[in-house]
Amino acid sequence: MAVPRPSIRRLFEKRSRKTAVPLAVPALAPLKSRDPLALFGDLRVRPKLMVLHNLFFVVLSMAVYFSLIPQYKKQVDGARERELRIITQIFELALPLTRVEGLEIYDYREGPIAEIAMPVEAVVWLDQNPRSVWKDAAGKGRFLFAKATELSQYRRLTIPEGIYSDAVRRARTTLFLVLGAIYLLAVAVLEWFIMPRYVYTPIQRMLQADEATQRGDRDREMIPPALIPGDEIGQIMRSRNAAVAELRGREDDLQHKNEMLEMQDRLASLGLMSASVAHEMNTPLAVLHGSIEKMLETAPLASPSHGRLERMKRVTERLRRISESLLDFAKTRRDRMEMLALAPLIDEAWGLVAIDEKAGEVEFVNRIAADVRINGNSDRLIQVFVNLLRNALNAVNRSQPRIEVGSCRMRHAGEQWLSIRFEDNGDGIPAEVLPDIFDAFVTTRLDSKGTGLGLTVAEGIVHQHGGTIHASNRAEGGACLEVRLPAVCVAKETLAHV
Image (cartoon, rainbow, N blue to C red; front, side, top):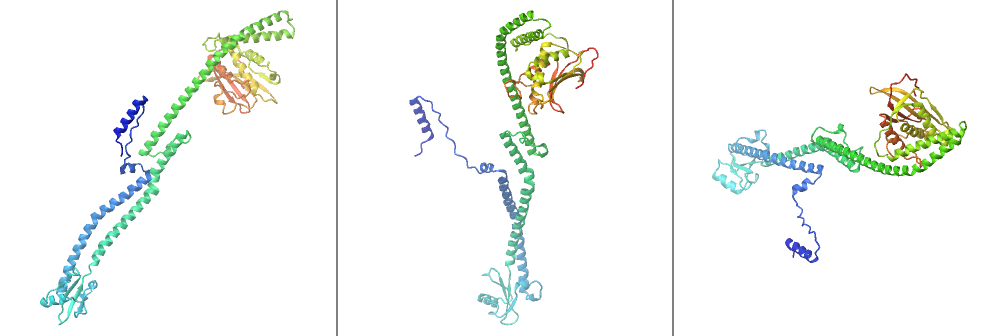
């Protein structure tokens, strides 16, 4: 015997109290409704429309039938009664029916009783009523009998009642055939032309776009505006496109924020590590700097070793300044700006890069005029130029290595700028890296020397000087890194345009 629902719940509650363990009692799901409307609503669009087509045809047929056929049958019955009265009167008056055109269907006969198959009761009745007409009641008025003028002769007229029922039946058949033909034609036009174009195809487009959205296929998730109709389905499509576009925009914004947060975390870790490295470098750099100064005191001024020691001293001093900058990597600081000659800065940066043994094979050309000057911090700008020259050194063509630096004045957005171009003759920057080359940790070098931070730091320094930095590939081959700094008002310059 089935247990009532309250008993089941009490059973669970008792067990819960005994075991002191809370039990989640699932609510008993109600029986699924068998509502025909709900079942109809679960159908797909095409079967649903087919059901509606057939229902419409049935309702239309019934409406036409009960509107036309009863009226038509009433008219036919009236005509039958009128015709029967007229024929009876003609037959009773003994008019020559065989001579009337169109009355052949009544099968008029005249002769003895046996010849016309006359019932006995008809003979008896006609003998008593010789001037009347006897109607075959058993045959539902199918035959009319009367006495002829000659003795022992009788007349018979057959009433063709089947033509009236045939007329009604033919009317019904014709009506259903016409309605069926109209239904088939309407269904063919709807299912092959109208519905596929204006309903099925737009719905299929939306389903395909939704599937693409679920797969993350951004190339196919938007419905082209040219394929969106102007009806309610089109409104749904446009609303869906707008919702998907807004969703993708928020996803991109969120992804960008996540990348920025991740980059900030990495840069924060890098700042802590840089401060630690700088702290560890300070002591050996101080010892090295002091040792070089003592060696300079004993080295002859005109000797080659004195020049090398001077260069080593400048390098150690620069390393100490870099170490100091690493200590406040995360701090915002204001560097001392001054008017600087550009060409010597480029030469000094190349001198630092030229320590690499690969630089001895490179043809380096500095086309910057001696009177070109910029406003900036020498140490920070040298750091930028060293990064750019080192990148060029690693990218040059090894068969004929060449690096060229030039400058020119230019006007952009109504302001005067100084463009400094660093060009090499290597393979250029890969197309997939070029848009993000100044982002942190982006590098095309797979060895341990590529950290992906050089150009990021260079971009930050250039921005501190109020300038911009751009990367591109040369049409004749190789890469071009362009630094644009605000131009200063100096004497007329003779610059090489590159």
